[in-house]
Length: 179
Image (cartoon, rainbow, N blue to C red; front, side, top):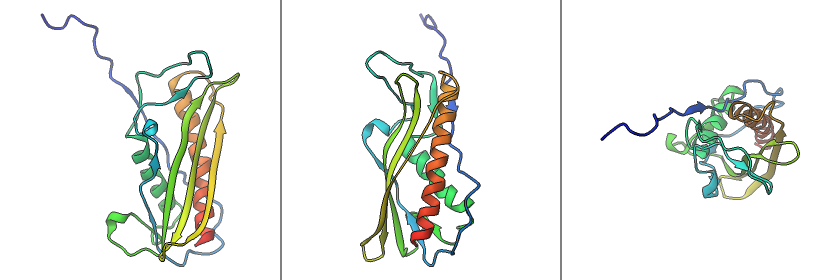
């Protein structure tokens, strides 16, 4: 016998958007920046939209997925954000084979819906800029929270995307100033 179980429901796929609007750049970066793959604990290496409950069981979005594993999607949209900020000549990926003056290291710390009295989309990551002689030029933690407009997967993905956008705009401005 075949076909006796419930029909598989295709997942609903959500994406992150690379910001397009950035504050004016005071100076054009003087060197080439290579953005390395972000690090994250295994919990974030998933396509699932994560929910961290607070005591009681929170919602699960079993049928909702990011368009790629979160670290890969995060990485692609960070690089795209630098490109959208008109820094195409200043940013590269390690696979491009270019010798960089600076490297950007990112560690994803939070990218989830936090359940509390009022649920909040929470995005946090640490970033370090290394010079070509492996010295830390600057380091900073970026954090943003956004309240979803509803309790469903679409509103949660939109809130996480908005928080991501806020932090990445800050990241691009900070990195550009440090170079």
